[in-house]
Length: 538
Image 1: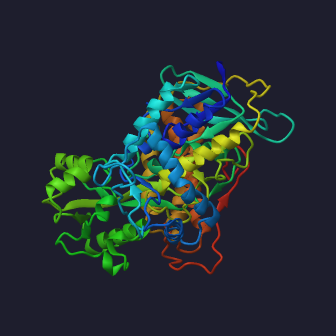
Image 2: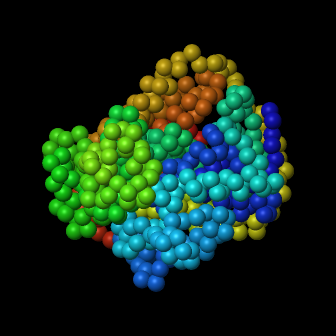
Image 3: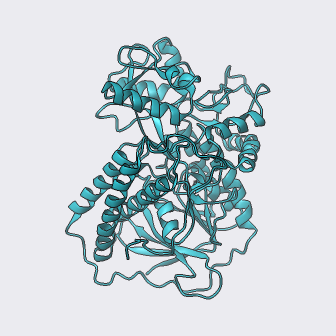
């Protein structure tokens, strides 16, 4: 088996992964491993922008306050303040790298065309039209490819972490590398490293309907859980309220910035309804808006709600939202003349691997950055456009911390991958069936509105599925499909168990059995199981 040595391994190629790699490349050799093309990531699909205080009528205190309100008491205020206050320096760094944010009059300086999104009390969202994520990704990719100390391995899927404890070595348990599958050749190899960064993104594909790309299969969270790390607050799954409702749209996201520019949520007769649910109306935080749409659909029997921005001119909409405008037009909807049918879809995982601001986890040698990490910034509900800000700040801190430790490769042998009596799969239909069953179960029972009965049903089904998947995993040669199925099933169980532990409604977790918030102080839900394929009935 091939074993590759490197000083730093970064798994994932979104903003968290690429910025971590760029910063780390100043201190040693970095391998960036991504399971598809380098540009395929949640970052690439981010339309809104990056929330940051940039004007004199805004303040760090106000941004902190908005974040804490959205997070419903579960944010770590010190973490929030550090990330918010570090934002302008990281924005300046992006601009030095070549990223151009939209400006109000094109005159340069600090005259940015700032957007406003749900939960924000000020306009503070920097953007590059409605393709901010794509523009960020393009700039970072160019820098990563230009660095001779960065090696990029595409079409490679991490299987599991390699730890000193699993190898039976004395001393504290630490991460020393990872096994991975070369999706092109089908071969399994290992990377040995003293510093491994998980920047694998989110878990949207755990649900039947999602705004996320196909790569969002909770790989990092699942691997960390199997390695025995604490996983925090996985019940808080953010459902984006406004995804285009069309059979061929594949959950195309209509950015919250559209409502920031005055769009209203209305029923099929054009009547606005958000003021009945929250005094902030259409600019209430996402959890409130998603539940309101879900409620309207259930009460009226309508298959969707609608966005109305017909009061804006075609010229304005084409300039401010060029990608969204053209995409909607391709499906037969002119934003300037038609109501846009929308439904909620799974969008962002606010929980994840328990990690510090600098990415450090409970296991030495392992770091988590971006959506895969739970730093304390988002609490029970992420404030819109705070995620890219978090990735920028935390990747910078991560590199500073990792560079301060030894970069000598672990002096140990990594055993070759054992296939045992595994054979090529002749039951691929099982993977497809179980894949759909996991996602349908999560959508039906662990969605926007939950209950004890729904969660109990979900737990029974998910655990039965995990038994089947594990048996299939050990009996068949490894493929990317079985690895991703294994991971979404693991993440599904983590979400269900976390939701069952939270006997209250808070932020993104709303349950019919406990519709009110519990008495303070609010508590995090933390799951930390022994290393291995945790199944409690064995």
